[in-house]
Length: 147
Image (cartoon, rainbow, N blue to C red; front, side, top):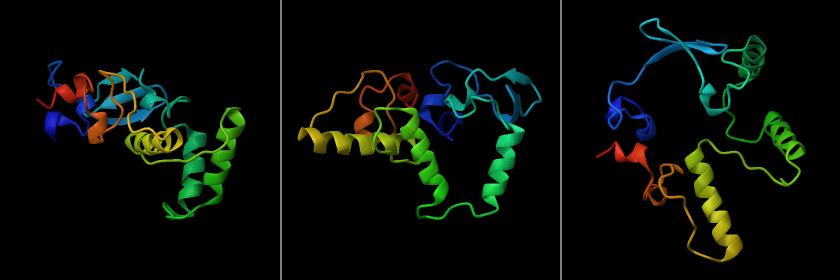
């Protein structure tokens, strides 16, 4: 893999060294393939806010997985989650889930252009907004590692 990882943002070329390859996680800790133990301050960028591999979460995931892994169609849990998001954020009226941040940004660009009837969108220089071509212009150090 280029840079030793699947994402240019996590590549090590610009900072030196080699990426740490993790084997497992539990609670607030992560272990690499050499059995070194780390405190995880990243928390999977949010989804692991209650810790990794929480027993209650694993039980719920296992029960859900028994029903199937992917339907390719709407399901009750998707609608329950959307309602929870709407209830938690008063300004949100509708929700659309995506498979990645890149996909979310691409949908957002379409929505903004349709709503404003404008072609141009402001993007923050030096920031990563996904892996679509138009987002990678001046995307910062992660993309710079590609050479």
